[in-house]
Image 1 (cartoon, rainbow, N blue to C red):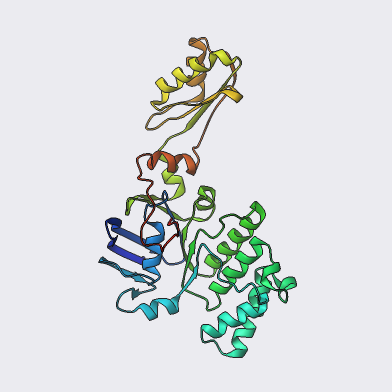
Image 2: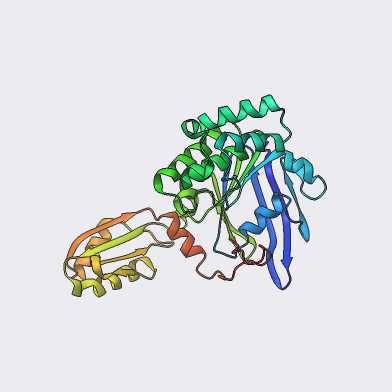
Length: 326
């Protein structure tokens, strides 16, 4: 029997005239990573704020770590860790002082707070910088310190709201490694991200939120399979690009995307079977001179763009004055 760390049914939330959540259902098994994807304004940040007890739903129910977010918010807060879009560390304190302070705020005893801080600084690769002010840390180091602070109490559920935004690839990879390590030890992670590669790397399940509802869900592989394959053709002569696009449109049923600089055309074979030999034969029959041709699995970015092509790009309301909602 599956036990769910996060379970919601019919969550509704309005901010004035804006209907941010419209019956959101989520079911995140314990020990898994679930990625919430969606365009800006789809309802991701509203969902996280509600599940972490920062706001209350207008309708529906939600349980986190077995506790109702409305009836038992304190129990929910004791069971979770949260890393938001903005870092929560104090720039004037050292890394060690930051973690000790968070430990005391979580009501850990002095000795326990100090011991946990020392362990986490080493675990997140911050041991050598532990006694430097956080203002001297790089962006990646600050995010790792922020993540360390969110797991001081060994939370059952960790909420990560766009944790690697703005980080370089090396720093992003370090955060990914840390998340994988946490899940290996049983922590459930609910992740929102704008980096589709991040969801592809980390998530056991992906939930695509569109207009406040869970529009599509599945593993990254299942979502990619919905689109079939991606066919790409590079022509030998720029004048042949239009002919290649016409063949791709006919064979795939999709709208080809052209890259004149590379003399390339690509389209996704939504709902159709296509083999490389068939593609090459049809291009040859149409008199298209080829430089290269190939079929590959679509990226999660392409899945996202296809499935949200009609999404409303309006920002969420209620995120706070002047704050862009995600």
